[in-house]
Image 1 (cartoon, one colour):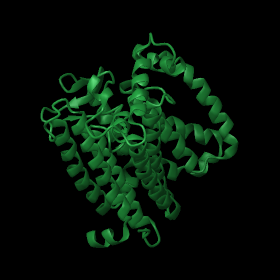
Image 2 (cartoon, one colour):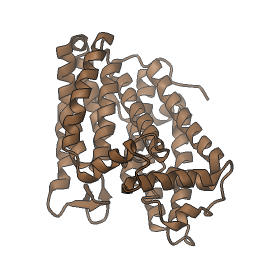
Image 3 (cartoon, helix red, strand yellow):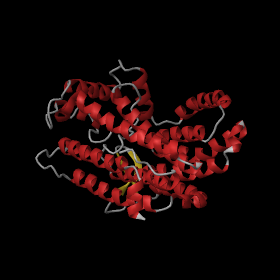
Length: 369
C-alpha cells in the first residue's frame, strides 16, 4: 500500500515541506541570540517537529481519511475538550502574554493548531451530510452555528487562531454549495458580528486593530512593530544584506522575530528575491492542493482539501500582510516557516490528509511532476 501510495501521490507535496523546513531552520538559526551555535534549542525543536511531522504525514497518507466521516461527532467533542485543556490549572501555560499552550513537562503544545485539523475533518463531514440544506438560508445558518462554537472558543483563547478558523468555516460553506443569493445575507451577518466581537477583545487586541487603522500614530506600540518590519524589508533591497547580517534583527527592535515577524527578517537578509522565492513555493503548494480539489470525486475529500488550502492561504496572506501594514497584527504564524513545533506538526498532518485524498479520491492520482 505504501509503495502504491508513493507512486500515485503528488511528489511536490512531499518535497515542498522539506524545502520550507530548510528555510525555516536556517532563519531560526540566524535569529537565535547565541548566533555562533547553528543548532540552538529552537532549531533542534523545529527539526524534531519536522521529523515527527513527516512520520505523521506518512501515517495520514496510509490511513483512509474516509473513516473520519463516521466519527465526526466524536471529533467535534474532542476539538472542544482539547482546546479547554489550557484552562486546567497546572497544565495551561502562558507564552507571549497568551494562555494558549499546555505544558506536559517534556513538551509544550498549542491545542489551537491541532484544532484546525480536527475542525476541517468534522466540518467537512457535516457539510457533506447537509449539502442540500445549504440551498436555504436556514440551512446555511445551521451550518454556521454548528461550526461557530469551536471558532468562538479558539478566538477566546487565541484571537489569531479564531480568525483563521472563521475564514476556514466561511470558505468551506461556500465550497459545499452555498447559493450565490445568500452571499448578501452572509455579509449582513458578518457586519453585525464585527462590533459584537470587538467589544469582547482584550485591550492589547484592540490596540492592534487601532494600529492598523491609524498607522501614523506612533503612540501605539503595535505601530512601531509594523514600522520596524517595513524597515527590515526595505533594508534588504533586491538581494539582501546577507545571511546573519540583518541590522533590525540585531537591534532587537522587532519582537517575536522567529514567529510573527520572521518574513521581514528573511527579506532583510535575502532581499526581494528571497521573499519572492518563498512566495513562489507557497504558490506551488496551493496550486497542487487546488488540483487535488479539482480532481476529487467525492465532496468529503474535496472539502478537506478546501479547508486546508484556505488555512494555508489565509495564514500566508495575513502574516506577510501584517508585516507590510496591509493587515492588522494578529500573531498568526507563517506556515512551515515560523518557529513552533505544534504549527509544523499540524501543518504536516494537513498535507498528509490532502495526499490521502489524492491517493483515494482522484481518478488516477496526480502525476504532474
